[in-house]
Image (cartoon, rainbow, N blue to C red; front, side, top):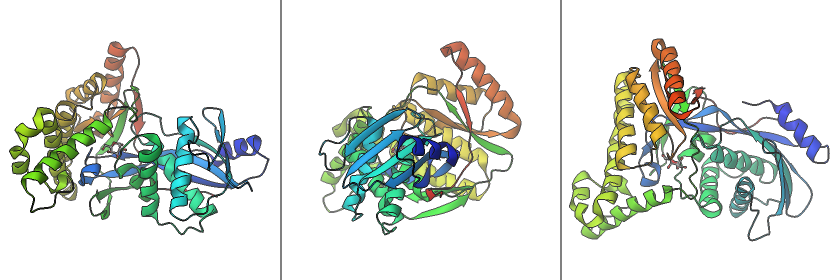
Length: 388
Ligand code: GLA
């Protein structure tokens, strides 16, 4: 995580010299369970030790927000009462979450905010969820007497993506950013919202992310189309079984999917096939983790990659290449992480293979694409918090 002094010094410099409160929220990894959250399935994320840190202070105005993005050296001022809100995409997260927190009963007034991040942008590690939860946390503390629950802040972050940023995402990223706990992954049932912490100390293995540096951006990407395909399949299954209630693909069986295959077409069928398989894989991974069987965990990760690449079609050439390099090096498990369309692979690698794998990945990726992938060793950290 970043240094408080870094954020504080900019906050003081860019506003009126006064200090506010500092909040931090992490990005996330996800061991397995991709594109399952909005299908009512399971996910297996954990918060990381990188994220967003923001200093926030009520500025005494009714509804003027003065915002400074330290890393971008960009300043945007806007009014919460402006129905259009700011144009800059980073400022829309602030505008959106402030309005969503207001809807939850927090009497948000004007504030100053400066923020910075060390979670890589566009790497599929949820820098945007980190931003939403950080600000939700801060506004809840400063204006709301901490009356809004953690779950409501998760949902406010998700609503921000839906209502102001054009991404119909699920709840995984905001959940991980709010509820994360150092050293633990979390298995979340996205339908019931029940979750368990799983201490994750894989003896002899480690997790490492390889960032293709292909910028992943979900707004305007076919992310929403994937969700629509899944919902379309559910609609068709529902029509065939009017006596049962089907909310998401979570409620559907393989047989029911096969029944509508010709109606929904091959593309939507493949999307749903991936989701049903992924639901089973997360549960298999839970059992394998309980048995300490990391080879099994890895096998499931490779299957997920295959499905995301061939059936869900959210991979890209660079990510498939990184996955192949992992296979060639005998890495236990490797797959695209997060929404896809660029970003990182997550790799479960034996300690004794780590060095050789990283060296080979850098070399071969560089030969093919003219630059090395970025390497992030995963440290599982805490969720959203007040720093001072
Ligand atoms: C993005 C979304 C999440 C989830 C993942 C894919 O990160 O924000 O809600 O759908 O993609 O698992």
